Image (spheres, helix red, strand yellow):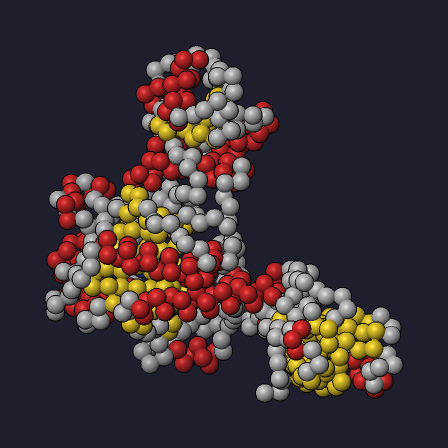
Length: 585
Ligand code: ASP
């Protein structure tokens, strides 16, 4: 090694030692006769010290010629600092420099490489390798490493085997568009990049692997948002001879293990909630359960009193904001504007203030007297000082809008603390959902999910009411994982494809390999996949997953550092037998 120590290692106990450090020049402070340099590497920062009169003149000159981000090798003696810095681990010492070797000079970086940088997103992405030198980004990647290590350690301890599945596969319909890769050797034919290794992990169960996992790249050609990337990573798992309960227990174990080892937090037991309850009480299949604020349905106390908006509504439903009766007119108007935004879509908002003196004041006083309003309050177990916020309209839309309002109010009153964690299993998802655009049933999870046996008879008569053995894990209102017990016999799988609008030929062409496999002794099996990037960002307390990915894509799906996607040469196109509009006649 060129160095004897790292820049994060030296302590007061090392005083008087002669050491060699290597790293990058983070900052130079030249006070004339005294000069300090912050030397940085992955492990920390060590202060270097030079003094006119004491330091050799040529050396001082060499130090003055250094610039930010120069790579250097420095020899010196460890000394106790006069003014100590309690904020860094090496803050008690500094290095009295006796020699500096410049290993490589550096151009002035396009942004400052410090915790708070002056670089905007675009610049940081173009020079991501410099951005990665910054502490917060490096720490995010170290956290990612730790989550991966602990995932492997837990799953290994539970007898899971890591198996790699191919990246060049064929399209599996899981709701998103595929990225495709042309095959040179098979002109006119394409591979698809996996949206997930779903069918392969099921085949591994047929092969008898019993417990599989993989920390694996998946690809989905979707429109991008802050928390989405075209390529992302899953912790993908599958088990044989298990019930849904076994899977939930095993992976609750994984999450608790990760919380404990990565965050030092003992996560409470993860409660189970049915999809139906999640929709009824939270208006969402991924409720944030860090706080209560459950929905109360008010049809029986709100309808029939002459208020048209309530009377004509399929559902009258509200939430109780604890201690918010003191909200001002302006605050209430802001909430009304919020629910009326097109993306929320409510027509208006009714409020009832439960005054501290026990009376009620509402926006519908014309239609409801004190006694009637007190019945509203009872539905929420509201107390004096609380504020009821009520929406009315078509059931699904109203629940959705109220769910948004619930989160909005909770953020306002500080109930969404990112250092608090509440996990939840949402179970019993519907098997199918009707898609207005395609005018047919779609699998809510994916086509390999098994219906609950007791709901099978409804598959013909009421397909929308059939529940699946499917589950999601939700953390702080974010879906972090989802899976299901699978179909493992040909007939049911065939029936499922039929329900989804596949002809027998289409089903055979796309998934014949899986259905064939089911005929050679497929064990009952099920599994789950966790969104690894998102899990890491939640552990890191960040909104975006981007800083937990070493080289992410931007919102347009581009990597601006290597400048891709990019065109390819005519020669390559010819070789692939691909004609690009305008280039080949
Ligand atoms: N393959 C599924 C997904 O990517 C997860 C699973 O069912 O195990 O969402």
